[in-house]
Length: 196
Image 1 (cartoon, helix red, strand yellow):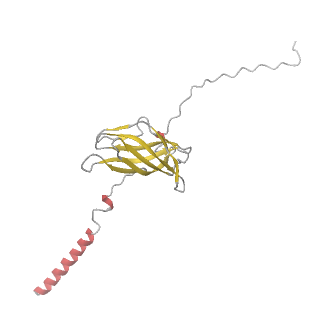
Image 2 (cartoon, rainbow, N blue to C red; image 1 turned 180 degrees about the vertical axis):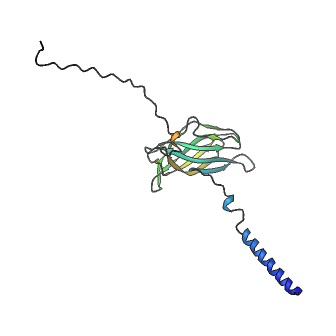
Image 3 (cartoon, helix red, strand yellow; image 1 turned 60 degrees about the vertical axis):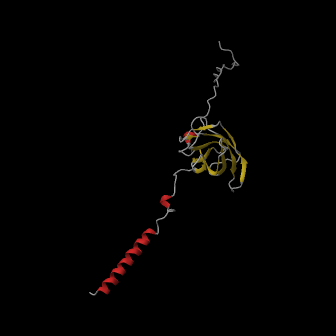
């Protein structure tokens, strides 16, 4: 075998090897699916700038859990890189045709955010959410406002209390202390004929 044939074979095998490597690497990049964050949860995630050096306040699994009558609670986990407070939540329900529905009435106290510690909104006294258009299976437009001025806005799902995952979040009914009156004893009806 002469040297020109060997060179051609070496060039061909180098080309084939290079082609194979390039085909393998075309699926690799900074935007590949395996590098994308994924949270296996029903709610949505929102990141907003907080503090310096590009740090972010992270809202995770934001959603509303509701009954069919339009009464529910706000659910999310929040981590902030700096001390802050969640001071207000507001928004609108969405109707079945995805048009903007009635405003949400959201009540609840401020939530303290300690640096790099998770705050779960359903721990303690939850934020209650009511609206005539609030229905499980639909969406809500939510804006969370923090004392620092940061705002986290998202369109979040409305889940049902009947879903086993959220059944423990259902507000427990308050037992009312009602006294049960004993039924009066039946009195015999007067008989028409006297007994001897």
